[in-house]
Length: 289
Image (cartoon, rainbow, N blue to C red; front, side, top):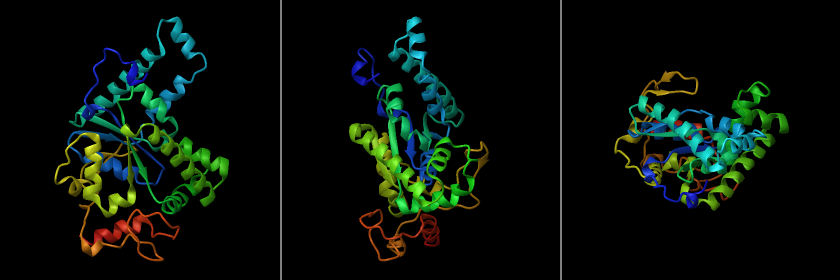
């Protein structure tokens, strides 16, 4: 169902639209989740995979025929699914004392049009991108020992299709970002790209632009609270960081995100020089507190 077909239906303000965080695994989507979840109005859940399950349900071969026999149109079916998601996620947000919810599930890159249809265009996407070399290095370190045993269907599919190692994850990175690029060029009004390198090197302006896109004000102390708040992890355990680790800015840290072969502006992907891992960059920034 598209917004154009919502005759007689009042559109909600942008500040009430659901938020989805999408991107490659190991690209910074969890960091983005922590940032959103720190906001006093937004509860950002870990990977729910809820929309993926509903997508598979919607693809059941005879579902549309069955709904038609019950007098349910595809638009009505989409609206019912949206209400189901809003009920589940809305209750999650309410338990956190917040009015708005977000879902951080990287695998949604394959079903972006489905999510837009379900919510009749009233949905916002944050697409997290990270330099491919850093992403692939992290994917190799994290997933290559888990081929065939990982519970995540996307990473398991890539490993089984292309094998382990950098080539496999290069194919995955390309697949994810091509899907995102196609979608966001068709729907720029509901899409916002966030580069991980920009979040690390220019947190104030980068995160500020994110909340502008979402229609929310950014509290002055938000960045200092990102790693100290209690939150639910993907294993459904409540945790907090052992010590406060605020974002930092300032001249002492400038240039430390450059490539090993020479300095360049953060987020500049114009050459393919090997960049130091983002994990090392974050640790260096912590030393600059």
